[in-house]
Image 1 (cartoon, chains in turn brown, blue):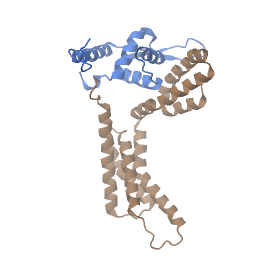
Image 2 (cartoon, chains in turn yellow, brown):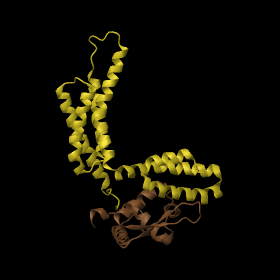
Image 3 (cartoon, one colour):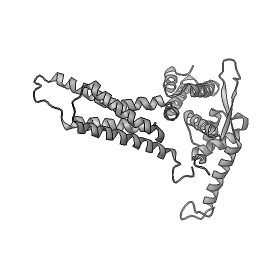
Image 4 (cartoon, one colour):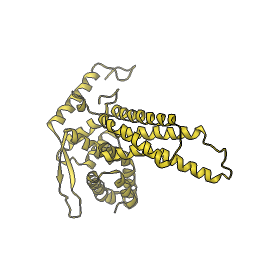
Amino acid sequence: MPPRTALWLLRLTCSTSDWQWLLAELETEYIQHMLPGRGPKAANRWFWSQSVRSVWAMASRNLREGEWEYALLLILLASAGPSVFMEAWWAYLLSLVPEKAGFVRGADFMVLSLAAHALLGVAAGTLCRPRGLLLGIPAAWAFALLGQSAARSLTAPWFWAVVLSILALSLCAGAALRRLSDRPASGRFA
Amino acid sequence: MAKGEWLGEFEQMVLLAVLRLEDNAYGMEVRREIALRTGRDTAIGAVYATLERLREKGFLRCRDVAPERESGRQRRAYRVTAVGGRVLEQALSAISKMREGVQLRPGKAES
């Protein structure tokens, strides 16, 4: 029997349709060649190595082939996640301070929050096709404003203008990165 | 060649392996063939993802094969389509045309 944890790891990154074929290949090789030829320990090592090395290929295939729900989920995370998280963090920090008067958030909070929006936005953009951005950007803005009201954050309007711009730009950058990576690499005949 | 018909280096290897293996072109066999001939030890996930991508582009077709043993699993065998063969031929011929007359190792005469 192949190692269960390795199977679980690989299953996490595969869609249901890919899983049955990939598992058939791995199991056949494991049972017919690896176990009889190398023994259980080496066969398990081989299975682990194949599973770990397949994670990236299968995860990227799964994300590329993924349904729009994955993109929307990541857009939600990119737009509302940082506001909610930063508010929760600030509330936690405030709870540690006995004298709260005069204790205000520094610029580092804003920079961290913007960086999180940008990074997650680029990641979400790589799941979007250019046409998907037409829906993705307004959705990101709506989620960001919802996140703002959910977090009850009292940040300046200019900060929100920056957040909305960063979200739009990072989504576009992610989609552009995806297009670039879809093109054949220069230097080799692709 | 249309944009979607360009083949990557690994895609070319996979198509060649499928052609070599004829009726026996399953994922693991393709992986083993590539390792045997090129020394490139690839993960089955990478091979499988490439096979499926080529199939989705119409360069390969597949058939689902019933397991040999009762406890075994159904496997997927691949064959190169006419379009796949043409695209591979064009890619390889373009490479050999580009290679013509080129000294691969500067300083040494091409053998």
